[in-house]
Image 1: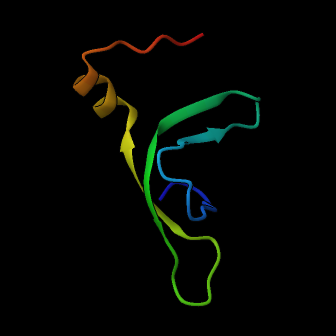
Image 2: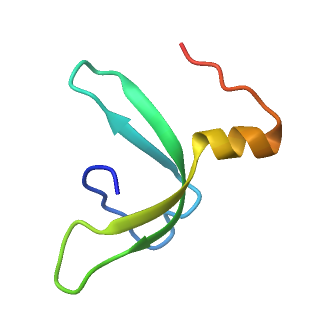
Image 3: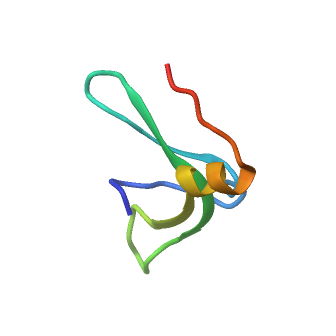
Length: 64
């Protein structure tokens, strides 16, 4: 898990992003599943990394 994650039912397929203190945003991947531990927040997440998605799609990501 990277940082704190708050996911709910229906979030699968959404982007996994992080925002840095300088305002930049990093895309980590696409959410596959979230799971909670008894009586805890935040929860754990499982996601497909951006590089895996790019390789499977035979695509190149462009960043600005």
